[in-house]
Image 1: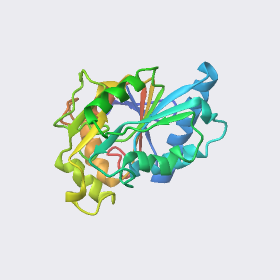
Image 2: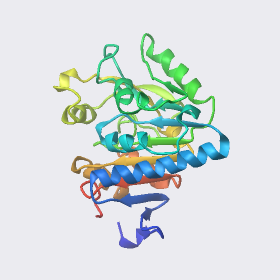
Image 3: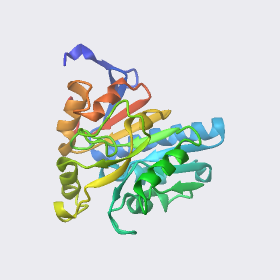
Image 4: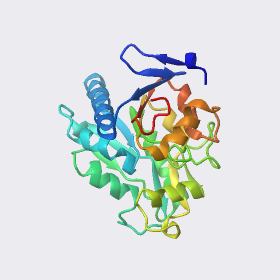
Length: 261
């Protein structure tokens, strides 16, 4: 990409296309900056309209941001409704690897949400996908907090199943090998054979219909995906590349994940 394609913003960040980017020196600083921006947006939303609806990713990459967000002052959490963006199919109820369990430990059980809706595949994943889509569509989604996978996925929209014009809001997907290996490399599973092969996920159009998106991506393991996201074509070969066209999204990187640092 030519240098003139990256524009410096007045606040010290930069833009690539419509996407705003904040590069921070390390993971903790990045998490703090993202949490401060999310908290400010959330407080402003509550002041303006009285309630807010949020969607969260569940992954180790989000831990610092969520820890700082849980401590942010001045947020009336009982006026906030929470959702999460994907869940494995086939894990036992209560398994620690379930994303509902992870988000419970890192956020949902730490602040007093008005409601926190788990995405539960059992007993009928297809029926549960439709139910969750209906819950999401009961009102606008104000804020999405998400990451990017090592294969460039958003939620569990891996390259083989990602669709920028998906007609569904929540769907069943097959997880690709790179995505499943990431779960092992992140320490969530002991071996590849333990990682489920299917999941429920919010689709890319459903995520993009939110009012504000905060995409938090630390670590050297994500640098190749961020390089493809920012400097490759906007295509489902790197699903996160679609964020370059979203003026309502801010991308947070640390020095290890940022290819332009």
